[in-house]
Length: 74
Image (cartoon, rainbow, N blue to C red; front, side, top):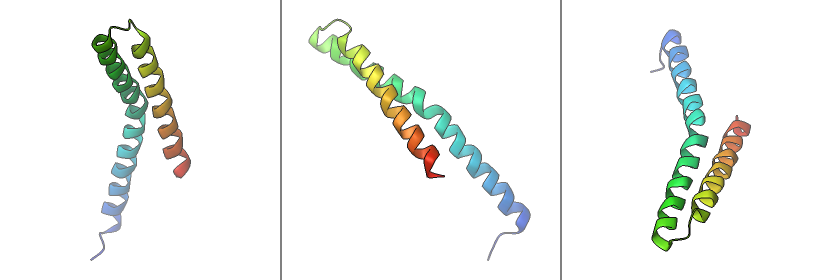
């Protein structure tokens, strides 16, 4: 049984809001995860800040790639 029109438009608004908020969090979360992984590798292998910088940059690039991929999908 289909939903009444007012519920359907309300639901699509919530779906859009959820999708946009996930896109807003995607890039910072990817950069933080890359930074944390790089920090752990630096402390494990005693390499200074090499992996921290590489991890943060690779996380930011991966987050930007995913952000663009999702944005171009719609």
